[in-house]
Length: 339
Image (cartoon, rainbow, N blue to C red):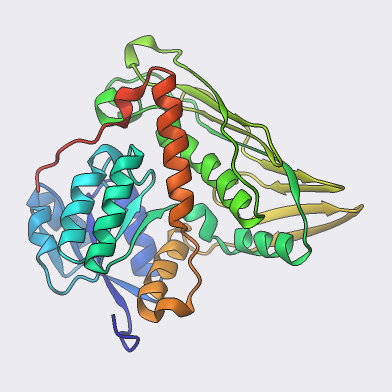
């Protein structure tokens, strides 16, 4: 893409709640992208979405949108087992793709789609918005600049839900469960910080269980890492878990405050002194990943990558192995989707 291009023209595939949040950020809070088209399997739904967000083009099939020559990048916002066939469709039509977390349900799909992206000269990234927040980036800069090392990372993501077989997080046919739904956030945090600090990610011990047997998904998961940086990453879809992430090192305690996965306030205690990194968010947080991805396309190599593919590779491998070993391997399969 030419560096003279003013804005990246986005398409959105799959028009559920997460797509609404993405579209809100794109249309109200982004400098480098604009909404050009949306697609769903139901044209009426696509048209209603377009009307809400003043989008010029709507499609009743994903295949139609893939053929639109005026789209530069596509955000895939469907339920995650359907990500792979859509990624293949859009990458094959030479669209850059930002795919909602988890990018795929297994490592093989990620590696195949990454190879396809390389083949067509386009970019494929997982949409892990947490690591693109300015406060989190400032924290990483603080650690690197001061040559600090962490000794432990503890983060959890869990919300109480009553069992509802119609809710996708309890549906094994839609790759539900705690690990893929919310565990991915904490694992990304752990692996991204390890990479930043030059530390190898050890193989975790994994404890998964289900308090709702008929759901056939993991309702609780805990990944414990023992190594240069210890880690305890917990996830739940049936219980509320602590919302602060705690990072520790020698005479160092870092607290990523409430809803750590949307980091805007980070407290640091180091050698008896306190400081706070704060960056208030005007939108819903999606604007950071959208503008980062857009700038990567517009300005090419002048913008350092943040949504690192090697972290996606590590996280998907950890999740797939954990799920398979715990008897939830059926959740790691991909599904076909009507185009």
